[in-house]
Image 1 (cartoon, rainbow, N blue to C red):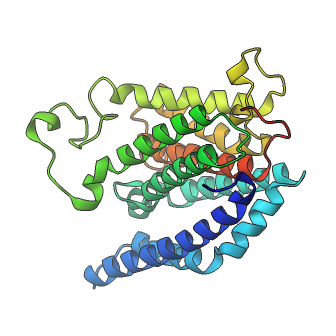
Image 2 (cartoon, rainbow, N blue to C red):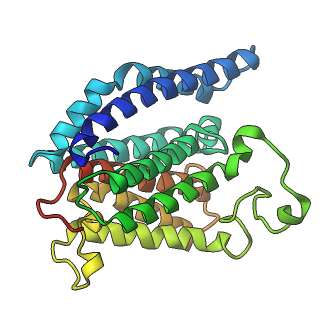
Length: 291
């Protein structure tokens, strides 16, 4: 069983190797789709290859080790804020420059880079919650972390339609009629599907508020550091809340593309925020144990 004190090194090694493999796979997938569709090709496929190459070459164990070390210092919150701003500005620029184009449609469509990144951040967050919960000397409640790991893993599987996205099986006829997208998922079942965007709006709004609130509620399990979102994550939660609010209150609107499609950005922002929050909890744990 891993010691909590050694988790930063373990996670840096894991993320470095994972980034290399994931980047290479993205590069090959984009290149393969480009070559297959020649002489026609989609710019989004080329962008996928370039993005994969950047991930494989730029992100390494050393870079993640540096990230964990920075997050463990008083400047860690500034770093999170900087990362949040860069991510938010990148999304906003992408929307205003390419919104409504085929590139944008493909970039946010089914089986797109954004959807895969959302799923992968959910999976990585589930793993971080699991290893933190079972590590020796972990200062966080084991039952809560294992519960989070289970919820995040289910969300990851739902994002991939429980493998249907990868293996392409046909949805059973009895289930297809119940599902808004005809997939093997629970969150797209009629009735539940309409609640997803409001639920994301509630979560992102509450998380943005918590990140700015120093005073904690007088409820023991809510006082735990697991819920103490950094102010550095506020921009991403806030942008996610804005996107969800637009989708909920003005559905069907077209502004530089279909507004409903932008919910993919909100899902990405939330999953990435949870991932960065998980890294921050490991790099900068509370001084007093809560076990």
